[in-house]
Structures are given as C-alpha cells and as structure tokens.
Length: 180
Image (tube, rainbow, N blue to C red):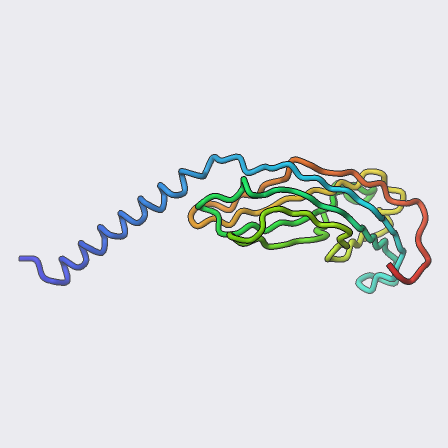
C-alpha cells in the first residue's frame, strides 16, 4: 500500500507547508509597521578641498569633510522580527552636471541586544565625500539624512528614512591646510 518512503515524503511535504505558513504569519505581523523614528543631526564643521582626481584625465575634484553630531533612539524600530539594522548617513545634492547626487558618508550595523540609543558627538565622515567635479563649492543645499535597512528574521528588507534631516551650506572657497 504506502511504503515508508511515500509516508516520509508526505510527512516532509506537510512539515514544509506548515513551516511556510508560519513564516508568512511571522512576516505579516510586522509587515505594515511604521519604522520611522525622529533623528537629530547637527553639523559642527565643514571643510572643502580641491584635490587631484586620479580617475580622470588630470582633473581636480572637490573633496568635502564634515564633522557631525547624531542622536536618535531606534528602540521602537526593533521588534521580535528584526535581526539587525544597517544605519547610514547620506548626503544628497544637485549640481549642474547631475540632478541628483547621493553619497554615503557614515554607516553602522546595530545588532539586536546592542544599545539602541545613538548619541554620537564630533563624528567625522567614514567615507570620502568626493564630487565628480566642482559641485560642492558654494553649494547651499546639501542635505544630510540618516536612513536604515531593517534586516528581518522573515520577510522583506525595508529601506526606512529617518524623520529628521539637515541642509548644510558648503563654503565658497577651498581650504589650503593639510590637516583636517
């Protein structure tokens, strides 16, 4: 009638179906949660240099340096379906050659169980803030925004933007000092 392999196959298929239904139930319980929290960003220092760009044909490009303060409480983002958060601070601005430029300046991974209060002071950008030309000089609307990717146990990876941002004007002249 039914062999051992046939019964094992039926049991395995039923178990997979139950696990798929449970995983979907886990996903749907947190799928529509609003994961935005207020973010406070302050910039204490902005410096601009014009440096050699070794990727192009002997051109010079703008290199920006930003020192910032960042505070946020991301505890409401965490629930039982969140493994970790990938936080990143990005700068968005427009130039004559590009309508939208986006540069990631700083990032951090926050695991479940770690401190969820961000209170960072005098942080320097972790990555270079290069422009592919001279679009940073005298640019009055460079917007800093903290965003995060939620890495769940089950479900999609939502990209969430914090509810606070800051516009930073860049100087009209280049720094000539060698230190930051």
